Amino acid sequence: MRTALGLALVLVGCGGAAPAPPVAPPPPKAVCTDLASCERTCLATPGPSCTTAAVDMRRAPLETDVNRYLAVLDGACTAGNAAECFTAGRVIQDSPVLPGNEKRAKASFARGCQLGDVISCLNAENAQQQTDWPALRTKLDRACTDGDGRACGALGGLRLAIENDRDDFIAFSLRSAELIEKSCLAGTGSDCMLAALSLNTPALHIPGERILTVLRRGCDLGDGPSCFGEANMKGSSNDPDEVTKLALWRKACELQHPDACYAVAMTSGDLPGFVHAVDLATAKCEVGDSDACEVVATTLATDQLTPAQVAAVGKLSQQACDRHMLNVCYMISRALEKGPDERRDPARSTKLQTDACSAGWVPACKN
Image 1 (tube, helix red, strand yellow):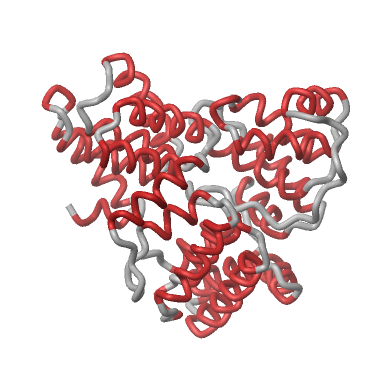
Image 2 (spheres, rainbow, N blue to C red):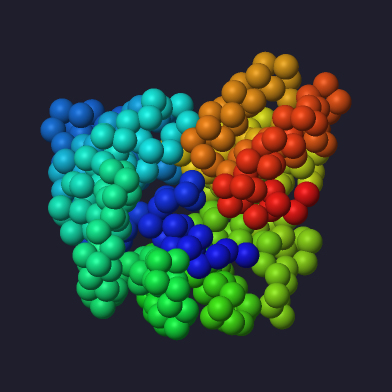
């Protein structure tokens, strides 16, 4: 269950959640034919080819690395794509394998803000540890009025957290959910999982069938997280049976969703599938996807890792935890508590859980 502020942070891209880039108009057609040619063209002359390369890299995470990805994001941002400015800032902030560089992240967010994305403006202010709340509230309110669902959600959550205004929180959260839902149903598959999360805000009391509808729409549009969400949907009159769930997990895995690949591998006992899940989760974790990093940490509790994998997975998981991905810190603690005997460390497990709980990760407070 997400708190009001927690959902606001998902919408703006703070707190280790998977990035939710702003909606941007379709870029001009790139003059390139494949990832390699688009990447070359982008690095030579930033333009539409950079956006095309970034999209292709997201579709094939095992075929790239974080530095190449960031290079094309920077090119797309320079060429005027606000959505990719936001994504670049998030990668710089969140990647466990990049050195922290708040100045560079702030520059990317500032460029996105300059190009008209209010959520980039919010992140730019967070990057310098100061926020002019009245001015920011005005910007978010204007963007929400203009139809930016993420701005509505962020405004509602922040109004509750800063001003304790529950009525406005509910009103703006509903507006946010409806706008993102509309975008999803109109064909923007990448908005469908965010729509489901927004509709699932407890204070809104949205029926499960409505949430399931957006997840199904996202899955039909080829969005892996939506397929995975549909597979795990509870609380509707159409909960998937085990056969349907496995089929949806397999589809989500084919769409490069590491949680689904891990679920398929663990259900079927498929060792090559497990290796693929670890590799995919690692690749997506390295670009700052906290859900993928959580999958990486989860594997520490299994007995299927080789000694070399244990070392690599343990290192990446700790790096993600050090980047304040509290979900990852918690999963490390669980592995140290319940994993193979040689990896157990009760004292370190307790400390990680206590620290994650103190920092606000509710699941860590329940043990």
